[in-house]
Length: 315
Image 1 (cartoon, helix red, strand yellow):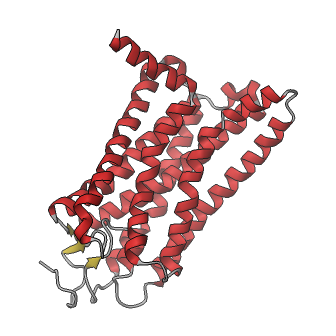
Image 2 (cartoon, one colour; image 1 turned 120 degrees about the vertical axis):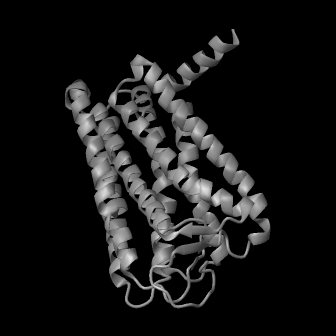
Image 3 (cartoon, rainbow, N blue to C red; image 1 turned 90 degrees about the vertical axis):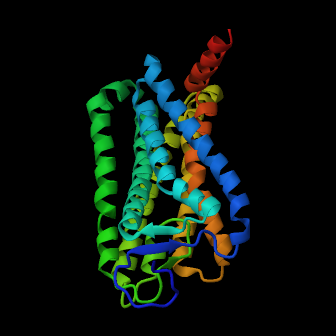
């Protein structure tokens, strides 16, 4: 086992995930709310998938994109939570080098996919509000499938260099990762020599994905708001804007903390490590947990179908 702080090795056989350094004594208790968040995420996202599948009236682009979001959230949370809980509860901190690279790739590629799905949802809201008469002819099932495929391919291709670049570095400092999962920059910081290629490419992905996606969403909502303000009555404006609230809430939960954390990881050295790691872990569990709640409560069709299921079972 390569568990020493200082040793000479290249591509170690294992990494040691430290969980939340400085809060080791509280790991058992920290794991309880994390486990609860994961359970809520699993229940909520599987419920969304079940309801959309069973209800023919929900077989529309908006709900297809919502299903893509649910699947992405399930993969995202599952890629890091089981290992995280095993560290907190069973002190199982070792992770195979190749397993670490796999976790890194899956986690980051599905994060990029999630951002792309929010853009696709913005396109759906734009067409539905700005050109409602052509919505069904523009966003047909084949078009939705192609958008979904493009989102998946973009996430997979953009993140593909991450594990290949990480694999080529020499790790002569330590194999201990101050995280509960294999994040890209956390692994890169362990490498010796000049790792600027990985750092610069990570920044490129950050601004290419979050930056461009955020700009596209802002432009879309600028046009959406213009269309809403041109509606004749206040009730019509409120009703139309209400169809965007769920999407906007999910965007805020995903983008704002994510951008802050990505930049803080690279540039801010003043934040205490245990606070940064804890906040990062909480952040990546928040969207998978909150998205089904936001859409379930705010979307009448889903909420109504869910109530109908419970009423029928209780009858």
